[in-house]
Length: 481
Image 1 (cartoon, one colour):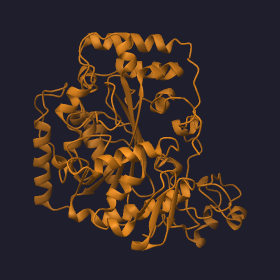
Image 2 (image 1 turned 90 degrees about the horizontal axis):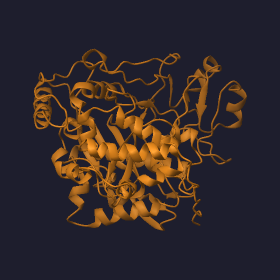
Image 3 (image 1 turned 180 degrees about the vertical axis):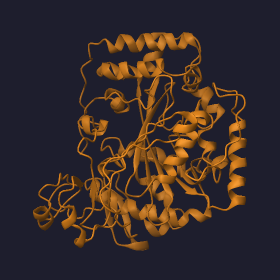
C-alpha cells in the first residue's frame, strides 16, 4: 500500500480560489481545507479543537477529540481504520463549519430501491452542473466525504458490470473501451491498491478482498465473481473498471521541459482548431500558452464504457482532445481546469456533475466524444410529448483525486440514465433542468443535442408542465438479496 501523504501545516480554514478569473471571468470555487492523511500522535494536542470529519475513530481518539464533529467511514465496530487507503487510524479531514451539504447528503434516501430516478438526484437538489445563466462554469466542489468517492447500487451493480464485461471481452470493442500508455502501469497499480482497500471498507456487503500484493483476490459478492490481481498486472486499470460502476481515466502532468510543453501546446491548439466556429465557439482565438499556475495534462490511461468514445485518438494527448467540442470551453474553462488540476492535492479531491439528453437507448451508448455521438444525441425539429417522455436524461457524477504516490490524477465518471418522464416523480428536478436550458448559450444547447428553437420549445413545454406537478407517486423497488 502506498504511504499516505503527510498533513499540511496549521489550519487554513476555507479559502475561495478564483480559477482562471483574469482571462475568462470564470469563478470556480472550492474550499481549501487543511488536514490530511496520517496525522502523527504529536500533532493531536495542537489540533484538538479542529472541526473535523472522520471516518472511524477508536475509543482513545474519542477522548481526545471531544469537540470533533465525527462521521464514521464505513460504520460498525469493525470500522477502525480511518484512512481508506493506508489503514492509518489518525486519518481525518478538516471541514469548515458552514460547509454546504451535497445532493448525496441531502437526498441520501434516493438509492436504487427508492423508486426515484437516480439521474435526477442532483437536479432535484437544484444543482444542474450548468446552472449559471449566460456563463459556462466547471462547477467544481470540494469532496468532503469519502463515502461519496465511488457510488455502488446493490440492485444495479451487476447490470453495470455485465455491460462492462460484455464490452471488454469483445475483441472488436476492447480497444474502443481501454487504452493505456506503458508509462501509466505504476499509477494503474496504485489505483488498484486504493480500490482494494476502499471498496470492502465502504461496501462490505458488496466486496471482499483476500490476500495481499499480487496474490490478492477481489470478489464482487452480488455477482459471485472473483478476480486475481496476478491476472491483471499488465492492465490494473482494466480490473478496476470491471469491478466498479464508474468509468475511469488517469491523466498525468507533462514534465516541465520546454520542448515537451511546446509540443503539447501545439497538440492542444490543433484540437481546438478543429472545432472553432462550431457549436458557438469563436472562429479565431489567440494560441494558448500554459502559464506557471496551469500545467499541461495528458490522458495516460482510460477505461470507458458509458461516457465517451475515440479513446485511441485521445491517448497521450492534452485534455483539450477530451473537452474541445464543448461550446465555451476555450473561452471559459480551459485555464480554470488546468489550474484546478495543477493545484489538486491528494487531501483535497473534487467533484462535479453534468447532464445530457439523448434518444432512448442503452446506458452503454456514450453521448460524447465524437461527431458521430453528437449526431446520435441531437434532436431535430418539433417533437411530440410522447417522444420527449421516452428521451433519456443522462447525468454524470465525476470525481477528481490525485494519487499520492505517482501524482497522477484520477477522473471518475459515474453515469446514470432515466427516461425524461421519470422527472414527474420529482417536479423540482424538472424545474432545475428547465432553468439550466434557458440559461445556456445557443452553442451549448446545440452541444447538448437541442438543435433548434422548435426542439427547445417542445422540451421546455414538457419540463414546465412537469415542474408544476403534482408529483407522480414513486414505486419502491424490492432490494435484491
